[in-house]
Image (cartoon, rainbow, N blue to C red; front, top):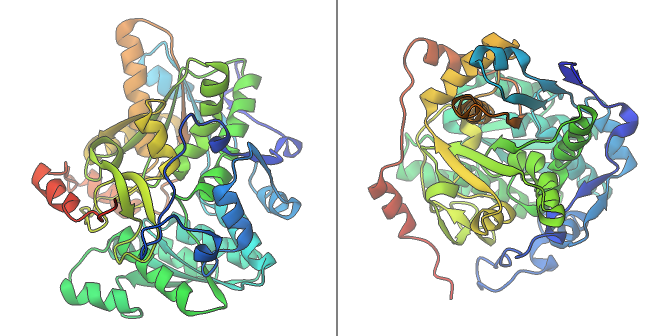
Amino acid sequence: MSEVKILLTEKEIPEKWYNVMADMPNLPKPPLHPGTKQPIGPDDLSAIFPMELIKQEVSQERWIEIPDEVREIYRLWRPSPMYRARRLEKALDTPAKIYFKYEGISPAGSHKLNTAVPQAYYNKQEGIMRLSTETGAGQWGIALSQACNFLGMECRVFMVRVSYDQKPYRRTMMELFGGSVLPSPSTDTEYGRKALAADPNTPGSLGIAISEAVEIAAQREDTNYALGSVLNHVIMHQTIIGLEAKEQMAKAGDYPDVVIGCCGGGSNFSGIAFPFVHDKLTNNAKVRLLAVEPSACPTLTRGKFAYDYGDTAGLTPLLHMYTLGAEFMPPGIHSGGLRYHGDSPLLCQLVHDGIIEASAIDQTSVFEAAKLFARSEGIVPAPESSHAIQSAIAEALAAREAGESRTILFSLSGHGLLDMPSYEAYLNGKLNDYPLPEDILANSLQNLPDVK
C-alpha cells in the first residue's frame, strides 16, 4: 500500500478493550494498603473509585466490553489515523519504513481522552458528579475537564506548579471546558500547605499533586478521584490505540519490527504496545517493544523494582513497580507529563520479565528530533511524544547503517501546539539536559517503605 494515511471507518472502532493480565506469564504483586501494608480489597478503594473501575482493576478477562455511550463519544475522534512518515524517511535517507499512530487529533489534543471518557462515564453511572485529579503537562487535566463537560460533571485539577507556569494555555483549555485548576502544591489542601511550608519555591511533582487530589476526593462523598495513568484500568482503556494500529498495519500489508512510545506513568506506551504484547506472548511474534523516558526521570532504566507509594503523602496504596522514590523531585524539564517517580505495575512487570525494553534520553536530543519531525511531516509534536520520535529516528538511522529494512511504529501521543514556550526556549538555546545524578537517586531511594 502506497498511501501516506491509513484510515479505519467508524464501524471499525474496537468494541472491546484488551486486558494484558490475561496473557502475562507473571502478574504484578498486589497493591498494599498504605496503613496495614496488607493487600487491599474493593472496600479500600470504594471511597474514591466507582465499583466498575475497581472490577476492571483486578479483572483477568482478556476482553472488556466498551459501553455504547463511551463508543459514541469516541466517535468524535476515533478511529485515529495512522501515517507512513515518508518525508521523514527521505530526510533520514533510510531504508526503514516509519509509521506513526496520531492521537493528537482528539479534542484534548492527546491520547488522554481515551480513558477520561470511560472514567467519567462509570463514575456518573454510580451517582458521582464531581471528580478531582492531578495533571503534569496538562494533557490529562484537559481530557478529564472535557470528559466531565461531555457528561455534565464537575472537575477539579491540581496542576504541577512548574507546568502551571510553563504551559498557561493548557490551563486555559481546562478552564474553558469548566475545569477548576489550581497550581500544586496549593493552599487548598493540608498536604499542599505542608509542601509549601517545606519549600515555598518547589516546582511541584505529580506525587504531590496526586496527594492533593486524593485528599480532596476522600473528604467529600460526592467526589471521586480519577487518575490519568499507572493503574490497570487506565492502561486497559488506552489499548484502543494499539488495537486500531494493528488493523491499520494489516491494511498497509505490514507489521512492525519495533513499537515505540514515550513513557511517564505508562498509559500511552502501554496503549500502543500491549496489543502487540499479546502477539508476542500468544503467537511468538518477533516484535520489539521500546518504552522511552527522560534521562532526568529514568524510572524504568534506573529505578528500583519495589513497593512504593504512588503519591508523596503516602495516601495511595503501595504499588510494586520501578520507582525513583515517592519523594523524588524531578527537575523542571519541558516534558511535564513524564515527570513521575513510578510506572504502571503491569508495564514494570513486563520490563522486569524482559518482554519490554526501556531506554532514557536527554531533553535537547528530544527537541532536535521534534524539530526534524515537524519540518518533515508538518506536525508539531508534544515534547513528551517527541521521546518516541527521537527513538524512532535512532532506529531508522541504525537500519541505514546496517543496510537493512526495518518497520518502525511509534505513538505520536499528542500535538505540541500549546507547548510553544518550550519550543521558544529550545530555539533560543535555553534548554539544558538534566541526567539524574547517582547521589540524588541513591538518597531518594533510601526512604522506600518497609514492606516485609
